[in-house]
Image (tube, rainbow, N blue to C red):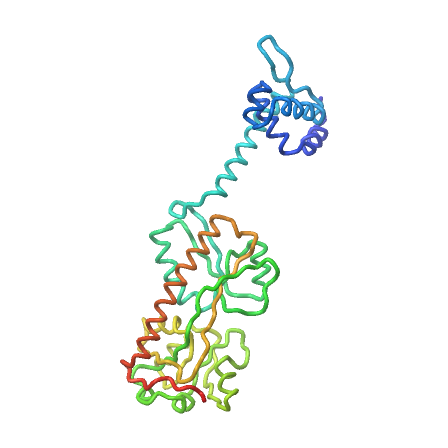
Length: 333
């Protein structure tokens, strides 16, 4: 009886290229035909057979009345080897091809309020007709996003630039979003919209991680101004509702404010001072750079991001055009 441990040791010692050659030899039982199928010369295939015989400790093919015949060991190897190589071919073919229209797969995306309110409605509308078998799971941002991308427990991240990501993390520009200021419809401040009016208002501030300050406060402080933050909130979800019911205002990316205006009586005005746009990026790990499904997922998100930016630009242009009676956007100087 052959020792199964010895068999396993022999199999582990055989180079993958020789296993492919062995499959050709066992299927054709002819070195010339096997060489042609394998793309080598008959002498090279004969050399491979000698190596296989030595490594497996079996002649594999012997002469018979009508040509070469397989040994008992070769007969036992032939079918499992063919199945294994066929399975490998199938796996490689799947890697090379991804059809979103017929695929069934779940992608895990980490994003904040911005992605949930602005990006996801457009993503799901697109998937409904272009990729109905694709599911999306949204998870909250955490400090270990880079590690999660590397482990494969996360497919992509949509977020502003933050602390440096670990080596191997890739990114591409997703959206460069301007800011707007939301007020309740009919707010008297919109009749004379300038920096003094803005500073006199009470403000709602979104602080996802509970930190103090913001880019707005930093810019105001650098020019000797200060605003009063009346309420600090951990997420964007309820902030527009607070603004719609009070005389407070909210300074936020225009995409978020446009989403809020669909359900609440708000007006959106341009900030009465210069604010740099918010740069939002799409992050992933280089381990999935060439994965067809991941490439499709990233391109789909990028297409959605472009449509989000176009919609936000329209909102900003409308408000700057003055249908709400604004009087321009004076600088802080």
